Image 1 (spheres, protein in one colour):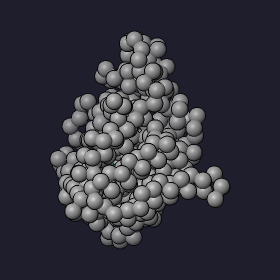
Image 2 (cartoon, helix red, strand yellow; image 1 turned 60 degrees about the vertical axis):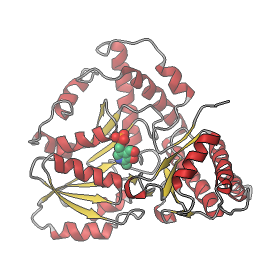
Image 3 (tube, protein in one colour; image 1 turned 180 degrees about the horizontal axis):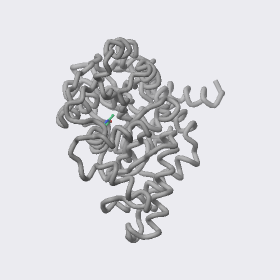
Image 4 (cartoon, protein in one colour; image 1 turned 180 degrees about the vertical axis):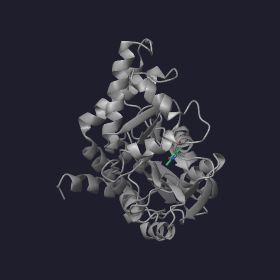
Amino acid sequence: MKSDQYLLLPGPTPIPHRVLRAMDRPMINHRGPEFKSIFEEVIDGVKKIYRTKEYVQIYPSSGSGGMEAAVANFISPGDKVLSISAGVFGDRFAQIASRFGAQVEKMDFTWGTAVDPQKVKDRIEQDKNGEIKAVLITHNETSTGAFNDIKNVRKAMGDHPALFIVDAVSGLATIDLRMDEWNLDVAVSCSQKAFMVPPGLSFMAFNEKALKVQQQNRNHKFYWDVALGLQYMEKGQTPFTPPVALYFGLQEALRMMLEEGLDNILVRHANYRDMVRTSIKAMGLELFTADDVASSAVTAVRVPEEIGANRIRKCMLDEFNIVLAGGQQRLDNQIFRLGHLGYIKELDLLAVIAALEITLSQLGHSLEMGSGVKKAQERILAKKGLS
Ligand SMILES: Cc1ncc(COP(=O)(O)O)c(C=O)c1O
């Protein structure tokens, strides 16, 4: 019997039944009062998740569309941009900026490590004439499972006038991010990660400073135009036909998130991270990132060459219907990535850890059966104060 897939990806993530049921509704007029009320509720909810009182726009796109919207609206052709990267998604932001005519200066960090705020400070301090117009950075580098200390990187910029633009696609609502308190200018995220909604919506939060830059922006844009979005927002609408069913889902998902509470959501994800990491170590596998930069959204596991990460993934899928993500680009077959964000429960992780032990054993990796599960169980008890 084939059961539902266990989706342990860093997106798309499993969809709660409440969200599925909310989407299963007849279509409504996207220019009518019912949509207006949903639209206003979700804009307000997304702002709460960003911890902002400023602006949020929602685009019908994946996360990369949101990144492109950020570049098209806030960076002009010829602008000098410092693009900080420690993996695939940091590289993507640099690529998008470069396609839109920015002069991109890359600052690269070793994949699997985090961005060093001091290096950013040193570079920013050299820019005495304020030539750098924007700094691009990834909150949680999903390709490696390392997160960046956004608060301190932003602090490292001091009062340099460049816009600070964050890709928080997989980091938002899994790792703390405080738009207003940390003075972030633009931050992008999307529906299929911690928001527990199918792919298809991206979110872009921005502040007044960014809006002023946008008003002078010289890049071509039509679909992504923030000015148009704000104009329609006053009517409780979007400029173009929105994916209405996804809005139904987002409304319900935000209700669930706000019922749980953002702080509790962050603690839950940190617990998942610790549970997975401690059990992976007990199985004798190597983690790709150090503990102090380890993501609460996804854990990357280095796999001995003789086994190969993709064989583990195939075996987990064939035998247990568990879907793990592979390594991207140069990390293909070297790591697998276990996503633990969104609508994931402890029980899912216990099952996955148990299945992984069986798989590893079948593939010839020597481990003590139950060692990973035991660590995970101990963590659950410790969390309850029972050990
Ligand atoms: C950090 C980060 N940025 C950008 C993206 C791109 O998002 P999408 O695949 O939705 O375009 C992803 C996707 O996983 C991501 O994790």
